[in-house]
Length: 497
Image 1 (cartoon, rainbow, N blue to C red):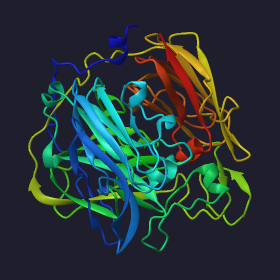
Image 2: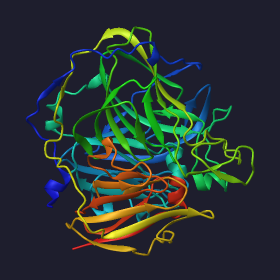
Image 3: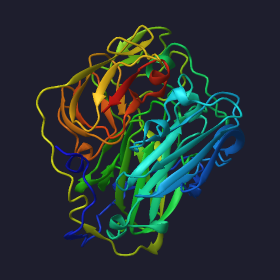
């Protein structure tokens, strides 16, 4: 399999898929909104052609108060970076924090020196220069810190932003844009009854389950709301949480259309009512509000779900744990348990009408179906026990190379989870393809059939992924539950000629 066939590009020659009738939403789609809502901010935008990103603390409004946050360029939320395919990006990172930091361009296929490996972290007052050419397909990527042992607090405090890659082929698709495109960073944070964003994990539960919040933030705002016309909107979403898995749903399971995932478009649109989005994963969706009435309130939410075999704290039982998909935290945590319902963003429908949208039947003409390539080249076992998070029984060591891989050669990697915690597995070095999933949910999910850099590995599951790497150097494989990552669930692999 050559790299062009392996990765795939956005193609032309589409057959129009018109939406002749708006969906009948009915009263079932309407959500109550008990709290006062805050208008959703549009993300500030910058070009990556010649950009300086300054990491520094600042303050931001949170509900009725203010909180310290850490951001890039003083913007909270951090700015959206737009890049064109083929463009040369020159980005200078300036560190005005009191600790080390470095930036990882999550999902981009970039040289070793530009990938944000923690060994390149710069201290307070330091600077780092990134210089790379954008070769990735049009899609939604993101950027965040990758400082070993400090990725979780830095990301949680606000240092996370979207990165959009565009090209002419995507523009020709005629997808919703401008006011009809909503770029969203979804996170959860722990506020309780206060208004201050603080990262203060409890040693036991938060280290094992990750730092789960009790309030959803959309683009840096709690209790967010946005007005939408009676039209079709494009939602481009990243799960920028530390550990929260979102089971995305609209109202009472209103239908939506999936256009793409981590590395760009799927081969064609997929209609769904639920989509699981783990930390680090992205989703590109179309939502049709034409069937709603003016004044309707429709909630984007994380629906309740269960993870069979997952260890959860037992409510009110300090220091004890039990099996089950959901349960009260009860161990000094204070966050909403994994799998409990959480409101994310309210859509309030106006009387305005949106423009007509004609959805192509084909989005990525050269994204070929994949089948299992046979022999597994490498197996990586993700395990969490006794407050330790390991891959193949080892915690991360900065100067240790765990695997050596040949550039340009397609390999099959297997990820196994025989433990009791979910692990979103992130492979650096570009985009890859999920071949199969055994155990647990069984099978590749509809939204996982495109290019992927992050795959959710639930307890009892084994995932096979076809990987191929362009650049030589040292790259990372790790769990994207940031508390697991910081605790050592990360591994170096070296790509050689």
